[in-house]
Image 1 (tube, rainbow, N blue to C red):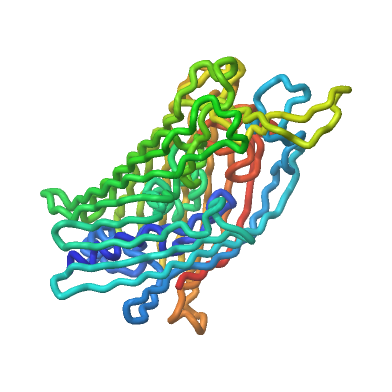
Image 2: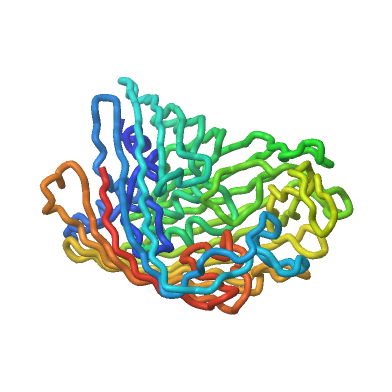
Length: 494
């Protein structure tokens, strides 16, 4: 019975709660590792071990018979001193803004200015479960997530919608729509130090699987601690281009595999994640949903070595609790992409006269590509990134200092796509629980604030691990090499 209950809690903790709030505009995820703030030394090691193994949720879950309701609502306001004001000459062609011609170049950086941004983020999870006398459990979960006035992840208000069963010795099996471990677990480590976005939303990988099957073993005791294993197989629908008649090579069947290993002992929680995909739409936004690429619509002239795109990510991350007050969080990430050329997707458009010529058809560029270049070939790339942070807890207060480093990428290409640039994100944060509120018995409330800085290695396109030149703080490295920010916010967990 104990194993069944433990695995039930761990199966959903990574996507169901609002954890520690962010301390800068570079952090917006809700996922969080367990926090020990009021433990005495006598029970510290025992409590940490249990919390790490269970991935216990910090939210106050409400149970109504077999129904569980859990979620969070947060609102924050951030100010930056050197943010870009959008893009100059925006276009669906060359979203990275690195190709010339055309002249003038498209998607270029604008002037920088002081700028304020408000973020509203909410997540709600509903779960149903039933445990039989023999400790076998059946369950179903649905999670919705919203940002400001739309879905947090494009086209996906629902990030989880699945059912499953758990056996105390055989493990668990779940099927349906699921959020990935590469996003949610990375977010759990980075969010408490205010660096969720640059760590959990960058690099290779995908955050939501539209169709997935996940198997997880039970927890195994080993001489130095405890360990468990999990594997997920996912797929997405084939995705035709907007103009199917332009197809030269049909779209591939998108498939993905993710492996998750978790190890813990009395003072450590360490996790290893490997995600490998083929046929997905390539990017470095690892929080995005798994969508299929559209095949080849260019032909051999402008895609001479076309292959279905592949990418993979390996993440090693962990937290070490020195005592009930001090902890250290760390991570190492390796991202790899095959490269993907932009796809023209030629089709009819509204007739217009351009340069004295009547244009009735044009390229739609609805498949943006990744690490594309002026020679039209695919260019393989690898990038290594790191994370390090510390946290100190004193009563109702917690203070954090952390950093994420994005390094130069290993690739051979005639086009500067960002492989020569680096980025360093630093965040200093403080938050306070506020149990004094009259409704604190039903929710957990926190206020927080922090100071952040982004420093780029050179003036030019952002590192390959950044989804765009404006991601994670609003500074465009083609215009400025640094940006400072300040954030204030309020967070409710229920």
